[in-house]
Image (cartoon, rainbow, N blue to C red; front, side):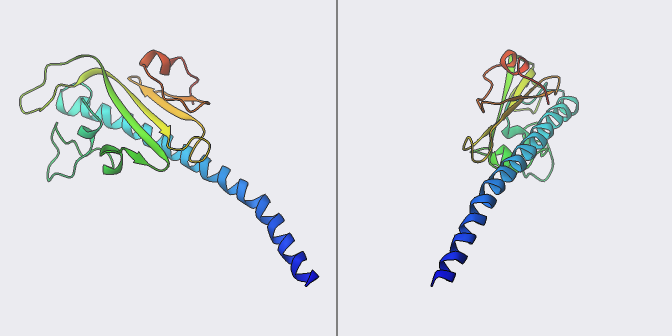
Length: 163
């Protein structure tokens, strides 16, 4: 019986060492995935800008789609998990907003785009799915916030440290 208690105690000690390391590794993987997804959003927004002459996309939903052919209304540039509500993937929630006055939409486009944007990635559960939040604005530079708070404006995003 004592041997069994010793074995259980050893297993508990090993688990207490391994589980926090596993959680930290999972958070680091989620953060790496979030920065790559945010980089993909900035690239997709630039491709949209140059392809459809409608400025940057009006919404995150416009960058997705599963249509037979891509249009300025459904560009098919990003994963549908990121471009359909609730905009969650890999432990992060993604956001996108056009900034400034809308441009004049070309014929066939349902909504006008913008001359600038802000894209964000925020942990779903702070301290569990991720610790840092990320944002990017029109130049495409990714910034991070150690507190995990979503940047509310382009100026707030650009004031944060860069990756």
